[in-house]
Every structure is written in structure tokens, then in C-alpha cells.
Length: 459
Image 1 (cartoon, helix red, strand yellow):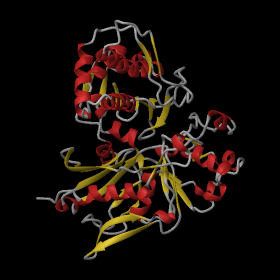
Image 2 (image 1 turned 180 degrees about the vertical axis):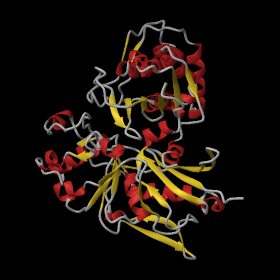
Image 3 (image 1 turned 90 degrees about the horizontal axis):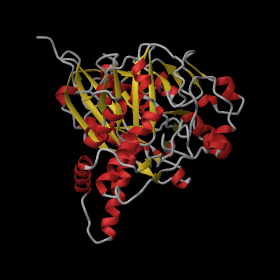
Image 4 (image 1 turned 90 degrees about the vertical axis):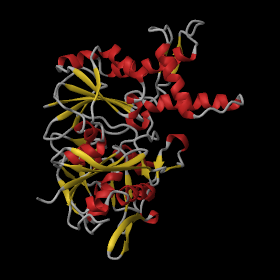
């Protein structure tokens, strides 16, 4: 009997790291681990900044790999990596070290003194007036606050000395790949490059001339590879994974979660976790007449048509925390799980229509960063808790529907929406809203796992 061969998939997300051992023959996950990173750190920009501690993220990667069965890791023949898009981390040589035991590398450790924090996709330091002052990208994609190039351009203006300390930049998943392969120069996939701004997906190159014109340190930009290609080979034997195992260039977590979910070109995928995205696959860029829809690089020279909202599960989680805080102040502390359970039950019982209109832009939107949340048409008939929660859930889907109307799905011959993300799978009130606004069946499959998608992408 031939020896088993597995693919290791790793997803470096906004709040957690997930890893799985994937069997390419049976298409099943045979082992998996996840670990919350707890990596958020204070920013000198206050609430406008959003930073994470990279060594904590590296530690979470180590935790997941070290807890996968060693007898499976010995048979890993490829490693696929994806992660949170848009963000940027800077580093210089010797930004990590290996910790060995009996000649086997047990873990990698990031060295804070040789790297910056990760400035994440949630960073809002780049105000509209600053973004308006930047040259227009030579790309069908815009550049927003939280995007790598925008954050670096902000530093060019406000913290030029900080930039001079570093030699390289990339997303946090690019850093992990550089570390695992001990690369001389970091590489970045077209998916992550497109998420940074100032990248032309059709030419597959950075807007170097435009960036040079505003004194952008183009020497920091990673080299570009196509998603699904290999960046290098594992530099050491790592927790039993053989030295020399090919490691993919880091891919986008959105693309990989969709790779793990799509069963047909007639599917659209709706992901609601921290934020919210609705996407489907097309063969080329086309004019859809909708500025809130973007074409992002996918795999095999295809594109994802995406409506990406900054407001998703994070808005509902904030509502739950608010209720918890109120209950605490009233002297009745209530566990978070109990609040969620009661809200969903009450939301399902609530009347089908409510005159209350909630605008859920608690975090603004990329196309409208100054937008705020608001509530209209409050009256005596709609102030019950279940009614308010249902209105909030409806508003999140209505917001997505405004960004990507159902006619766009209909014209693309989409026949169903496949659901993804814990924010959607655990919330039947949201699920009802999806079917109401899009007039399409919502189904859940075994997909949705970006770590699994990273493995599938390099099969």
C-alpha cells in the first residue's frame, strides 16, 4: 500500500490562526487545530489605529502545528498558507529565530526589535482628505484606509524615519512564508498585492512610477507571484514536517475560503464573520455599473466579483456587548452566550416587518468612510428587544444588498447562495434576511474553511 500524502493548510486570520491536515485523495480534513491570537495592541493613533503583535501571531501558528498529530505531519508534502488581507508589517534581517529540540525545530519566534507591528485592514488612520491627496492608482481597484500602500504612504508623510529602519514589507502571512522558507526577498501573491492598492492585476505589477512620484519606498515592495504557486521550501524540519517541503506564496483568506466552498459557477458565497462579503466567480473584468462591487484576483486568471462590507458580525457583537454592559450596570450580569441565545429566539418570534430602519455603518464603509450608524422610525410598536435585533440583522443584509443588488446575481445566473462564517451559520435571523433580500435559497455546505481552501489551492 502506498504511503499517505497530505497537504497542510494554514489560515492566519484577524482573530485566530487555523491549521488543518488535508487528504487530497478523499478531499477530507483529517486533523485540525485553531488558536485565538489575542494579538491586538494599543496604537499611538488611538481608536483610528489598529495594530497587532506579530510574535503573538507567530506563537499561535506554532501552537496549532505543534498540536497536530506528528505521524500525520511526517507525511505532509505541501504547505498552503493564506491570511488576513490588506494589512502591512515591516521587518529587517534577523526578524525571527528557531527553537530546536533534539535537532528538530519546535517553533519559530518573531523578534520584536527587528519588526514593526502589523497595521491591519481595520486601521482607519488614512482619512478621506489624505486619500484624496494621493495619486490615482493605475488599476481598476481603489486604495482605501487599512490597505498596505495607503498605510505606508501615511508613514512616508508622518513617520519617514520609522520606514528607514526596515528593509522589507508584506502582509503578516507573507512574513510567515518568508520565515518558514528563509527567503532572501519576500514574495507576495497577486491576491494580496491587489488588496494593498497601487497594483495592476492585468499587468501583474506594482504602479512603480506612480509610487516613485510620491517618494514611496518601492524597495520595500515584495516580488509578485501568481496565487497557487510555490514561494520556496521549508528551510528546516518543523515539528516533523520534512525539510524541503514546498510552501505556497501566501494567498488571500477570502479567496481561499471561497475556494473551499464553491461547488459550481452558479453559486455565490456569503461570508459573515468579523466583516461581511458576498462574492461569485467570473472569467474577466466587466462593467457592472456598481461602484461598491470590486473584481479581485482569484485563481487560474479568473476574478471574484465581491461586495465587501466592513460591517458584519462585528456590529452584532458590539450590540451584544452593549446589552451585557447595560445588564451589568443594572446589577444583572448575563453571560454572552445567554444573550445571543435569547436574541436569536426573540428575533425569530418578531413580526415579519418593522417600520424601524437601522443604518448599520458602525465602522463606516470603504466607499464611505465617514458613514455612521443610525436608527430611524422608532415608535411604540417596534421597541421590543426581538424587533430591534431583527431590524439590526435585516439592516446588515440590506446594506450588502445595496452594495450588490440581487439583479447582479441574477444576471450572472447565480442559482443559490452558499453560507459561510460563524456569524451567519449560528444566526437564523440573519439567514432569513438573506433569503428575503436576495430571493435565492441559502444553503450551508462543508466548505468555508480558509485553511482547507489554502490546501485545495495547491493540490
